Length: 188
Image (cartoon, rainbow, N blue to C red):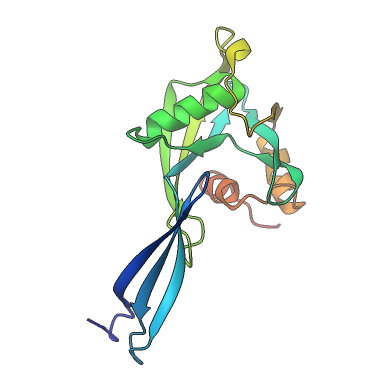
């Protein structure tokens, strides 16, 4: 039923689209809440994601640089990745931090979740803070990057990270949202 009062659109059908590496497209038909006209919307269905602001005992942030195919350049980011089927996002973020950087932590705080672009994407990214992150020499040589990753790990002081956001070096929205839950990113 169309409900113009709350702005909801009634979904009247869905059609599966192509299954791609990290998402599946589907096409949902909705009725406009006032006019009642149908709209076929493209939706990208994606598993949940997670990312982490990992701070070492001396307050350095563990960061990664990696080539991103969409922008065709190496980007500066916080560690993170997809939550595997059946995995909870806390387990996933711990796994991603260790796999991508060789760091582990026993001090975790959940920062909440954000949506990438709800206009056409159902992705939810869970954000975490890991304090007292330490390089685990038992694991650093066993880092398991998947076939789409070649990651460079670096440490940066939080003030330098905030400056990198201001300078446009950090552009990944999930990273910026996570950083904004820990640091004041306003231009001063």
